[in-house]
Length: 604
Image (cartoon, rainbow, N blue to C red; front, top):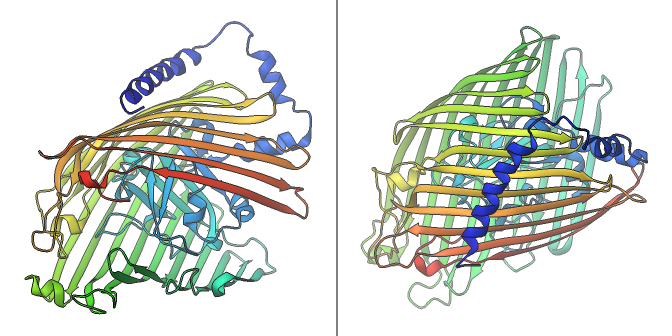
């Protein structure tokens, strides 16, 4: 696999791209008619309900609603019904069940923090959105979702692979978390829930929704606590979320939502490193959106958002550490604020759906690093304060043009920020509906991810500044086929290849000799994803998933071997759902991580 793994994936990718084009060529015969008839006339109502759930409209691919059968990107949608039957505790637990999205939990704990890798990407390459508002940290580039109560989530749309033509800095992909809608009944309805489990793990929540004239509302409040399955790994969180929808006319929607959350987690002791740490995170957000349907063909949307976050992570030496027993090792405090807005218009006219728009944001980061006595003895200052800001804007156009069963999705975007300059991101995709419930997809896209502010401005005893850093960029290629087979099972297969240049690399650093990130690497990520979902049979259905990603660092500084790592996962689930009163789901997950840490690759 390590010697010849690249060749077979390259050949399959080329064959898949060619096959998509050939399969979408109009045919004069009627060879496909028996399959179409079989799928169009299922033998029982359960089959119709299964396919209806699959025929979704999504908004993340081109920032306007369109059927998922016209999405050329490799996309996964998790609905509220999926989330409910999972009985998961966090957004991260839900994402861990998506083939190709590898979720790296910090600990095997209730409500553990997590980082996300899409098809072998770095966590900073994955853009995470909450109702279209980016929640990635400016300082580190990754996103943390532990502050989002799972109860407020209506659906999650995931794009695997570069999505920069729509969302800007998103080299690895996009996870768009969409919150619940407001009520539509004049009689308020709500929910009170509570659960209790091992190690004092408990979750209490309440929600209320309804509508009063033109004003709809949704309110949530909850508290989650756990003493930890392992000593000194406790978790605390209080969360509040609210959404208002005002419809003064039937053509105008005004939405305002706000949230507060303060997760606190003790990571516990790490005896091998003689340290223990605790993480405090506090977030506040305000999000406003306007949608105006000017004509049946033209819809104008706009919005503004404000996100504040406070991050505090003190790390202490264990009492067993001989040099500084029980003393502070290092403490990182980061205060971030982002104010942004967007405006876009969507024109739909029969065979075409065109979205054009722009967005801009202003972000600030105040980072303080407090060093303990051991670091101070090594020459590091007792406290270091770094201030940085990020001003960016982007303009984009994404189109979908239908030619019978064939759809073409070109896109282009221009981004600019005050630290790394300008970047353009073209994309081109195609889908072909070969038969009912059978779709072939292929796409090519150029993507980028801007370096995190801490990489540019520095901070901490191990990291120095490098103001010359540039964006990581590269091309992403994917091809896949999704099909219903004999009215019994839905199959989906995808091949992918991502080529990244200017990849960020940090040479090994110590307290005596810190180092800076540099644009040194060239990285190739390639692999495949396989999924299968059966239709209900006596109310039972089966889901299987498998994903494999081979990542190779093709260029590293002199003195280091070319490292690589393989990551793969197996997912399985069996569900019983009578669609009336009872449902249950049993799932299993196996993930293999193969990292070469000694070669300088950052650990997950």
